[in-house]
Image 1 (spheres, rainbow, N blue to C red):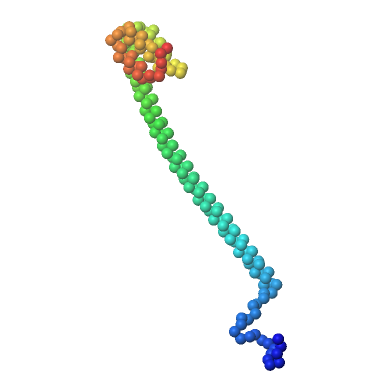
Image 2 (image 1 turned 60 degrees about the vertical axis):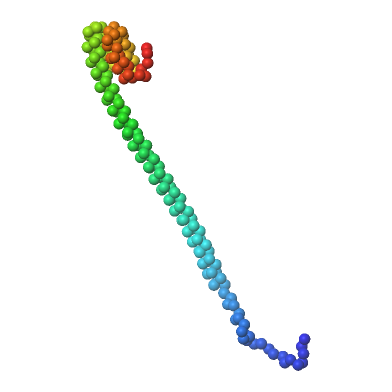
Length: 165
């Protein structure tokens, strides 16, 4: 619609109230912007990987501390058991010495030296259970002398697992 009533106007500059034309970066600027974006992306990936490694290291540290604590608890329990076993062994040793002394005097009196040496050999034997032989000899001696039955009970109480043979 080109009407003669309207004059023909040519626009040579920006129109008032409109935004100026945006800046178009050059090829060098585009290359620099792309490189900067790539570096930023790479830095973000490295930061994320470092965070994951730090979290894994923290979990590993916590696991190591937990294992250390459990090991210390087990060590204390093992030391306690060792101490108890040593005390029990010392008590058994003392009880066997006492029983051996009583057996010696009783056996010398009633059964003679032969039974004493047999009991002594049983105690010093390296077999699986020298207690069984001691119990057997003490019971034989108790049969020979009924008043000494309490000693047989005391000796058999030293090792109830010795069993009858």
